[in-house]
Amino acid sequence: QKEVEQDPGPLSVPEGAIVSLNCTYSNSAFQYFMWYRQYSRKGPELLMYTYSSGNKEDGRFTAQVDKSSKYISLFIRDSQPSDSATYLCAALIQGAQKLVFGQGTRLTINP
Amino acid sequence: EAGVAQSPRYKIIEKRQSVAFWCNPISGHATLYWYQQILGQGPKLLIQFQNNGVVDDSQLPKDRFSAERLKGVDSTLKIQPAKLEDSAVYLCASTQRNGDSPLHFGNGTRLTVT
Image (cartoon, rainbow over all chains, first blue to last red):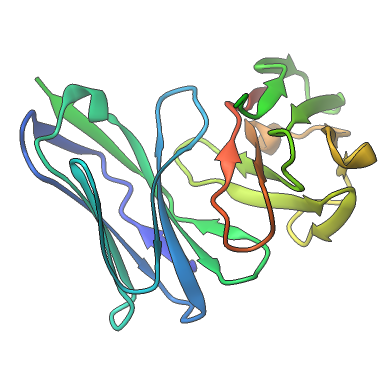
């Protein structure tokens, strides 16, 4: 079993829709959770960074962590064609050495 | 702030040849990572440096891959000899300190082994 599981999609939605991206993880020691966005032929770019359970909002993006169910979510409101990219969830153990990534979900927002 | 710089951007080689990638992290970032990203997959950690010392290289195929970080700044990753399954994007990332700081990535080197 992979430590961080993510549905690879692809996911295609119309412009303006609310997008929900999800991951599950297996290691209870994970305490930091991140979402990265990766455009084609570019490196991953940090979008959201949360510690432990709860919600964090930044503009149209909301990251949610539920440690009881080991579930990580990213919501995108009023989605735009420029949001089309691959979204990677990642998890980190506090003070530990490596960031573990999910497989990535390829998202397309159709005008 | 300048980002993580990597070169070359693209490289095509034949199997059994050797190749080297270069990374210059963000200034002041003590921790440097090399990740391998195969098409359609998430990045997988190959090696992590703290300054010029190796912290984690448990997933580095040491029979063919090697990496160094001289003087705790720039780093090179080498593959010798390359196999077809090494075709991937090699991403370098850096962070200010260990553990709980977000990683900043370069745009990677896309390697094709034919």
